[in-house]
Amino acid sequence: QINAKDPGDWKVWQEEDYTTTRSLMASIAGEAAKRQGPELFDKFFLTLLTERHGGARAPLNDESILVGLAEKCGLDVDKFKSDMRDEKLVEIIATDHTEATEIHGAFGTPTFIFDNGQSAYLKTFIPPEEESVSAFEHFLGLFEKRPYIGEVKRPQPPWPKGAV
Image (cartoon, helix red, strand yellow):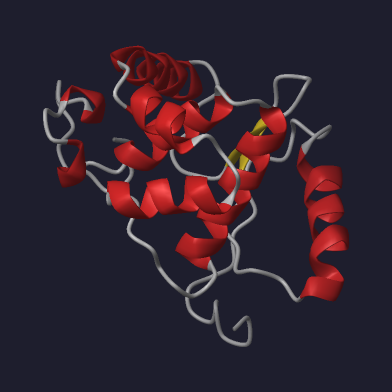
């Protein structure tokens, strides 16, 4: 939605066929997983992100893949599939998107919204495992409590030279 070439009045959540969008089905699947509790949602979400960004590049608009991930994570698959068809989940996504863009200024993912109302977008490659916690802590330290920092950007090129 945010990255649409000419969004006009078009809203991704108004599409009749969710498989024609890049990630609406994954958002619906996430909302369906939330209905089975925070622990299972966290497991599902991490698995989804790993399958998408960890090398496999799993498509986010393939229901069979999303159901397979739900099963892999121990979700009640029948409930998950039933919940994915609940139109209320699409309404939740629409409301969340509107809040993210209009209140927090989100324009991409991941955008982090901090408890103090500050927000920050982070563009990164997956850091080496031994640096992942400290890298995230540095990100938090830089943006969570410093509203006077608006943007940090590496000149293009050389990034991502040396990053991957």
